[in-house]
Image (cartoon, rainbow, N blue to C red; front, side, top):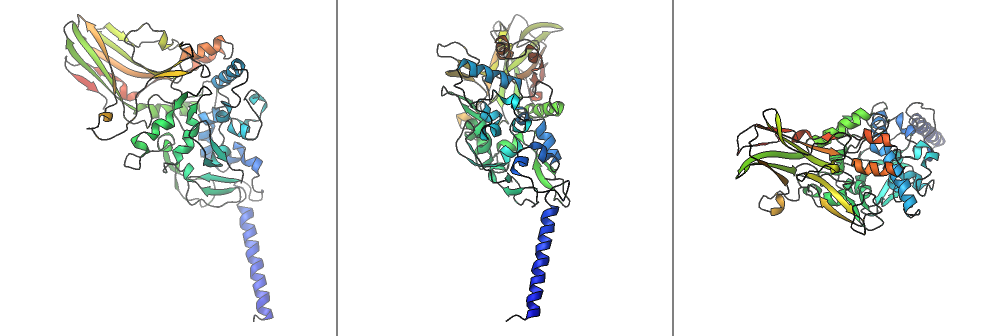
Length: 460
């Protein structure tokens, strides 16, 4: 039996322990001001609330296509036109990926009122991604969002603070293949017509990168590259292996937006080592032939991927004799649609959409079928398996003269200018936006051949 003095001592210790816990919670309740209360659910939904504690992550995200998703004039134009031409049948088809928190909270049903909503509900926000609790399907944003206030991430031992609750989630861990399930459900799209139009996740699932082998790569391993840093701007934070929140692919902001130069640099970085290219020159009875070969060596999906019906990726080949151009293919001006070329040898990689009458269609709600001409990804590392070889090549004939120099570069536009022209012609897109669509050249494909007939030159 405890004495009265012992009981008093126990009570005092419990009181002191409770005071210590209270002080610790109060200190950790915010990064900037220890006296501030913990973040409310409404505050957690606003990316600006994340900025004080996670400045590096915030700045990377703020210039990303996730942040830009609902401000992108092409998305706005296509959604407005689609809603008009389908009599509103599109519903939340577009906006549930481009402003998912606004849809989740019932603030929009079709994306036509986004200009009336606060910026905190636009784009793919911090709170939306980090509160995803389950993946319920393989496409069209089949995600379950939790509202328990817990911010989920890829750190397996998060440091507790009073700002918000934190928990480890394999869906957010770039080193866990399950994280690709989260990315994939928004990056695979099946249209209301039943067309599997965007297939990046499906392409990855069939690749060697989705297997638990030496080649394993999740979406985040490529598109959210690792870097050393601190999860939060707090005292005594351990140095961790984090990931970029810019999540670069190929699309970029085409209207004024934060951090545009760095984002385009990251896109270039992703593209530069994606393909292997070669130029070979062989004899023919009438002259020579140029053989250009392209192989997808590092993308964990087809190339190009995503909205491949909008992408335009082509080879520019120019042959010279001295200073004179004796052959060219794929040479376009910056403001010229590549599909406008009258070029029988054009080496063009893309999906082509067709409507129910068999006419080429640009708008996804009109597309009922597609013809695909993409570079597939690696599905086996066995050279005895025919599937090991998945390159594509184009042959260019030159008659009567032998070139002494040939140049090659593989080029890509995130969206074809003829698609933007179509949106501008319908009055849904400002024409001046067309001038801002960039064309990227892949560094690994910029080659020059200066050899003899029978010689080849290839990527390093």
